[in-house]
Image (cartoon, rainbow, N blue to C red; front, side):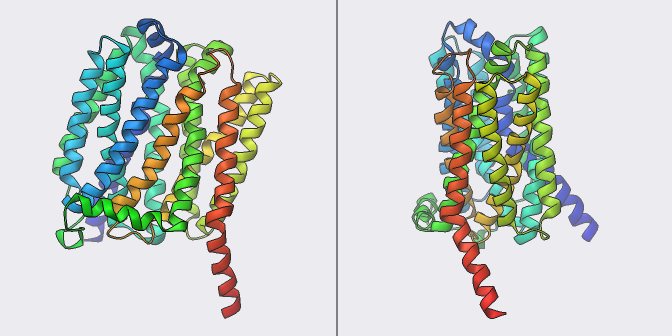
Amino acid sequence: MNGQRQNLMIVLTVFLGMLAAIAPLSTDMYLPGLPAMMTDFGVVPSMIQLTLTASMAGMAAGQIIAGPVSDDAGRRKPLFLGMAVFSISSVACILSPTIWLLLLFRFIQGFAGGAGIVIARAIARDVCRGTALTRLFSMLMLVNGIAPILAPVIGGQILRFASWRGIFWLLVIIGLVLAVSALIMPETLPVRKRIHGGPLAGIRSFGKLFRDKYFMGHCIMQCFAFAAFFGYISASSFVFQNIYGVTPQTFSLIFGINGIGLMISGGLTGRLAGRIPDWKMLRFVLWVASLGSMALLAGFFFHLSVYAILVILFITVATLASLSTSSFSMAMQAQGRNAGSAAALIGFFSMISGAAMAPVVGIAGSYTAIPMGIVMVIGEVGALVSFYLFIYPAHRNRRDTEDVVQ
């Protein structure tokens, strides 16, 4: 029986990882094609980067809706609907004749993909608690880490024989596979554990979450951290191809190597769960990320070699997996019936900050790396400050209480 449950957990982990990978697949796979898309539509860099903004804004909105709905209706039906719409909107992106229609359908695609992202996190909370939740979420980050490695590489290879639209055809197929899988998977939220009263009851639970200072501290911290991450995602193709002169295929390799860093970071966090308190792990990676982003900005100012920049960037980007794993587990521990709404709120803050940063890094044009560096510094330092303002005091007080008891 234990062996059967273990096999089921392995399959579920892979499935949840695929759902969580919707975000990097939607944003990373077409990155090598951004310069070509800019030429194709005849627009400036900041305009083409709005396709990233539209997708992330859609994901943010989709999570806010799908999370509470899944707390009321269960996980399977909203998940199937989301993945079906994801595939349909991907076809619409392919057929878009103008940049404005592409932006519209990218928003819809992101909205539908947001359902997969938030429901994957809610399912993780349904089936796991405590250290097990941290380990499962680290496994999701490990599986999810494969996507940033493979996505730009696959995108770069597709561009060898097809236009950027070929990349979106692959997204259509991925969405269909996930939609069928959603029909097959077992329901993880039984009726007795659901929030009754319709989706509005789930949405009303946001009020309770907004009053939770500790939970909102994690939301704000991840908001800053993902602003830095998406600043990197949206600007890196222009920085490395236009400034450092690498090919789309070489950029795909660079992006993939940074994805390996995410996998290593997420895997280590899972292995250390239970040995090192989550809050201590979080504090450590926030300091590494903050110092790394400052070093990166200094490297851009002083025109360090591409190899030095790559080393600094690898370390800085890798911290996100550990940061999000520890933070999500800590924030979700006390969220039982509100798991969908809580995961939605965390996802909303993460994605909306990313959506805001995508066009910002392109304002100064496609031949400067300084905006990317500034955005990453603001994001990482802001995350560190948020930790000390909202999260650290709760754990410090708990530690002081334990000392008094002893």
